[in-house]
Every structure is written in C-alpha cells, then in structure tokens.
Image (cartoon, rainbow, N blue to C red):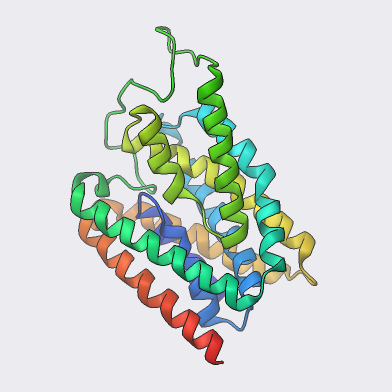
Length: 273
C-alpha cells in the first residue's frame, strides 16, 4: 500500500501545476493504520523525492529561476521543522480537520484555475520541455540577465519561503499551491518557470520536514521509507511519460474532485474508527 501511495503522489504531483502533493496524506490515512502525524511525515518524503526526480527530468528545460528558488528554499528549509513541531503538539482531530479544510481550498483553486486558464493547465511539472521560455524573469534583472539584489524582492521571497516551510512541515504538502501563484504575481514569470522552480523548492523543504519528522518520531522504519520513496519516483516517471496525453483542464478538475472526496472520507473514517 505504501508503494501505491507513493506512485499516486508522484503521478499527481507531476500532472498538476500546483497542489497535487496533498493527495499523499489522505491516501496514507485511508490505506494504512498510520496516525495523522506519521502520515504527514511519510508524505513529506514522497513529496520531496518525487519533486527532486521531477527536477532532474526537467533539468534541460532551463526554466528554473535559481536565485528565487534558493532564497525561497533556504527560508523554507529553516521553518519546515518548526511547522512539523507545531503539528506534533496539536490533537489529531484538530490537525486532520485543518488539513481537510486546506485540501478543500486547494481543490477549489485547482478547479477555478482549470476553468479560467485551461491553457496553463497543460503546463505540468512532469514535462516542461515543449514550451519556449520567456526571457522576462521575476523581481528585477539587469540588462545582462544578472539578478539585482533588491531588498524588497529578497525580503518578500524569504518571508514567503518561511510561510511555505511552515505549511509544508505542518501539513505534509509540497507548497506548490503557494509557490506557483506567488512567483507569477510577483514578477510576470511564466507558468512554465513558476512550475519548474516550485519543484526545486518543494524538494528541499519537503526533505527538511521529513528529517524533522524522523527526529520527533518514536521509531524509524527504513523499509517503509524505501517503499513510499520508490513509489513516488515511479509515479513521477509515469507522469512524465503520460503528461502530453493526460494533462489539461479536464484532468485538473478530476484531481480536484478526487481530492475533496478522498480527504473527506479519510477524515470521517479516521474519526469514526
């Protein structure tokens, strides 16, 4: 079951512009006897590995905005353990209810995005190589293309990374639902650039959250980690191979509906059980 959860997580993460990684936690709650905090910890591993593998698949696309990725990623890495620590202190019912509310919010956003901008729904994390990358980059770059270290831009990137880090550690999500619109609203970055850059940030912050989970967990199971990790990589590979045929507004709407159903059932069954 852990391998299957990893596959689904990697596949959905690859075929959505943002928000796909949130499937991992409710699937773990439905298919395993894990408590919410353990499910979040394992979800962080699946998200981090699938995002890292997706970055390697798309390395040649030249869409990654490295300076914003480093600033956002570093602040997020520092704050993800804090988010995981907060989650370990909360009652299971409160944490899972908050997670379900977040899942509903992301599902609505994915649905609206698919309706309002169907063309951008075809730009997915698993395959970015088919679109030309625009030259206009986020924040401010010099005419030679070098990043200008403006305080306002850096401070917004760093503070936004901190927020993403807390959310990632707390809920076990990748944070793409925050990163992608942030980069686009700040800068006129293309959807392709925002999606590619989000993968780099997600992999770093997700791994930071997972390491902090290991520090808080009562026991560690390397076999469990290996199963979900291999599944995540297999899922991202499947997303890469099928993205040209499956990606689009219709698929994003299906994912959003499935997210509402799965997270709702997970909440009900865990509390009744």
